[in-house]
Length: 451
Image 1 (tube, rainbow, N blue to C red):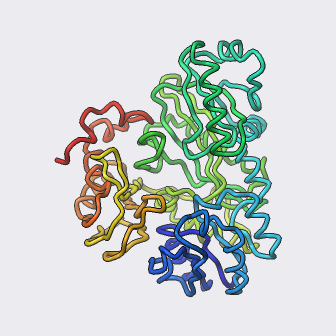
Image 2: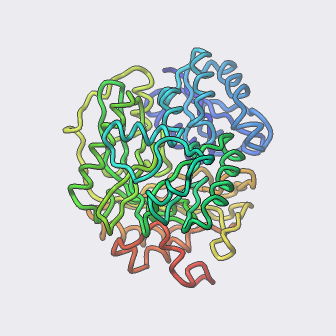
């Protein structure tokens, strides 16, 4: 691998460019017209404008990206996360063009992208799953009887869903068919497939996940993460390892995740996501994400393993060169997603010019940002500005370090979620790891006036 094209933007593009440069790999940033002066364009060895601002005409434009690779002589493409990272059709086009796809095989993307098929693959690999339907739901059948067998409340999920979308809760038989119909319509509109399935609903669940990695012959896990602090099924703060998990369940979650990767002949970085039911003391498979996760830096922090470096090595044909016994876990890490949003105005996006951007430093502090002071946040894309990652020897020390680092972080000119992050880590329930996926909706006044 001599020249890598990054088919993405923002902080993840910058993060990939940095590791590639350390490895002696030349980089190409593809940018929209709105991102001509972005940090990704500045840090890459070359940049190519591939279209106007709307993502559908630039970052999602298969042919424009492939043309840029051909024009610049790139021999590999890294999709980052989001955009085309889990698009099997694009992965196949990359390979058909004779380029290296930095990710799992298109077949693996297809398998895990279909949530009902992924659920069956998990069952076959011995991964625990929630009680639910096997395969896509036949809405013409006796779905009332199926729902009774699973038990209320339950959720209907889009088979092709992801990112917290395509999920609806059903509390009673009166809501059953109407909710299924709405879910099918939403799934068709969002994912071009109306297939849905049922699963038991877990009250006050925690969202935990395992980072796995494989080269097609050897598979390892790089520990677990907790992503339970969410707003409307979107992650806000993540940490590694997941606090308060019973040791036996943690080990089961990690080992069965590796088995799923082995069963699927998985190559590259993947994340196996679970729900943890603290009442029943059970874990259950949700899905497998076939890409680098936004929260991958906290796994890097506790293992010392650069996941992007591993992705590039394995994509270039190298083997892992280590086994599970060689992976060491140390300390605790948090990641804070810093978005250009106003949490006190219904999280409205806050595009505009960044007048001040002062980021924290010191021991155990990492900042992955896609912007600098003086640059403009455009309204066309996801509002993520960057991520603050902190590490220390245990959770309490990491939390104290996070509080200090958040106080040092100053961003002016636009509204951001930094003040909210300061409030969140001061919550007693968060400090005690008593939060769950719907916890933020239960805290009165959390999104009120700034204090």
